[in-house]
Length: 89
Image (cartoon, rainbow, N blue to C red; front, side, top):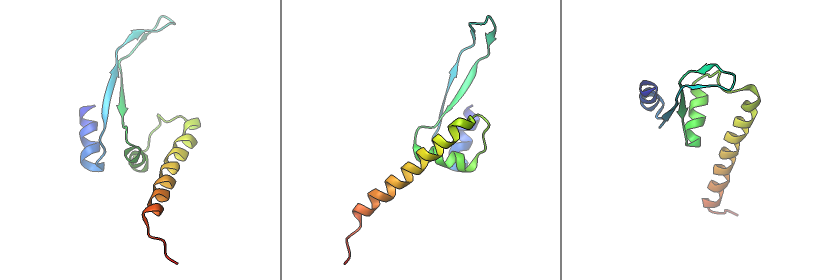
């Protein structure tokens, strides 16, 4: 995981962290393996990640949600930029 974090920083300039979930016994009686989670917190980094890296972990029903969330950020930044521009007549 540390290698992935360093590669994201070096090649895409994405600040990322990771966390792990210990193995445990599931309710069905089967052992669950230890899993690692990549954590990217800034919206601009999330956008850059999805523009450059294909993933199968994003469930189909979540794709539209993420796309809309990223578009919302773009619209908000354009809108806030318009307030800083002088008004011309």
